[in-house]
Length: 251
Image (tube, rainbow, N blue to C red; front, top):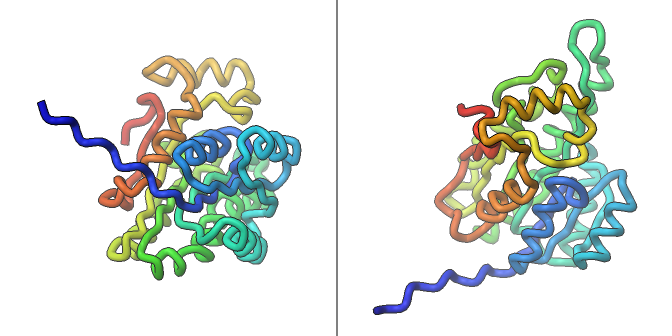
């Protein structure tokens, strides 16, 4: 019997993951490293988590605010000087500032979430897209959310930003398609991360009851999807949204 064809080994590329030292971003950074890529993990606040990741996995960590365009430009220049041109970009960084819109949500809460969760898409992509197009290769993976697809009480800012990511991704996909630069989105459901662990017990119980598979997502569920979309083999997939939510919402 003829031997089965073997999977091609992954080309080693430079991958940059924002929000890459904790939660879903950490899982994605580790999975990309395991695949053989040179990985840069960007963080903003938690120095301890960044040091632990760098020590445990020999992943390069960089600190800047993804809501700041000039900081993104300078940071990406540092990454490319150290590791080479960014060919894989995973935009994962995100924050929450939950409050109901009537009477409670402040302008600061609105702007903080929009600037970090949605503004960072422009700030990061704008500073890598020309290089990707010139090299005729790029993989951009943007993290949205199930709540950007279905909405969520008390999260008008977060849901708006995460829904905006979907439109941004589709438009960017059209711009890069002929030059082998793909852009796709992942919309995770509720996963076993610090952010979800901080929920009130009753709220978390209600969330679990709404997930048909009966459990929270594992960060690895998201990481495996991101690694595939970042691969050469995913070159015919662009402008897509991958709902990885255990059946909680089916668009």
